[in-house]
Length: 395
Image (cartoon, rainbow, N blue to C red):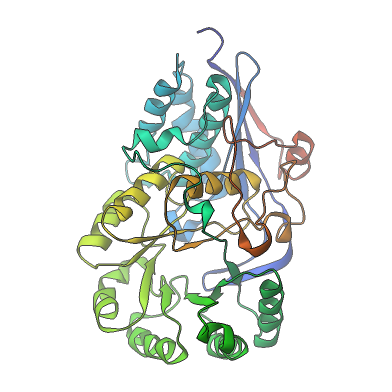
């Protein structure tokens, strides 16, 4: 098939202001730091991929992602000339996750999504094909979008402001709420929210979980878990740094609090360790963190087949490209314990996609459509929010 080679690659480094700063136990953010990859095929079809790098998670930075795409992935992209979508999936399978000891997860995500988008359009396919590729034959739309709902996320805020935001989220009928902890006001904020939601919590209309983003030292973990149990909060995400997750086993078995692995879950080796050695009950799968949609689905399949529950996570500051990738994930995976994302221009002052991909009333997750990822990117906004001139590579 002619003209299905990649003719041009454009890399954008974006900075989109937030409407309000967002803080958690590891950082405070005032703007996004996305990397967007645009692939143009020889027949003028264009596909887009996106990532966000978090140095404290995978060790990558925005600038490092750009460098990795140019040095590691560009030579690979130059060899891809598929005659059908099956060969595209083979190419995705062979994209690297590391270069020696250097991680490439965030960079891989942007490249993978751009390939899925461009060649999905070329061959009239969408990401649901990935379910068969990973041998999960009964994973298909509408998947978890039929019953799953996006969560409301409460950052590190003063207790009264957090309560105001919870009230707003409840007006939107968001029934799953995650509260960030890891600061001096964490218990005041959490107790204020628990007291405010006492009725809905007792009626099992609202589920609360907390996320420490690795901020708690291991020696305080048992005491803090006891406090969570006293408040009736039964899900705790990434309480301690990645290197301390071996200490989670007694917490997982001796308390009523379920641990959610996030920063500790990057690779498939991590998944095996967390499942087999530490018996972690919930995996937080994030597409940018875990290297793209295909590896995210593989991690979900690993968990699903072992009775481990799955949370679809997100990176703070995702545009509609990664949001749509998350929606494809939710439409394929049959069950999600929790889902995050879909904030779009509720968090960002603007988005780069023409159609807003944010959550619907009640946190409902839209069912995506293709071909490709099914998003339309606004070229003018890509230029407007670029930190510097785009990097254009003619292949």
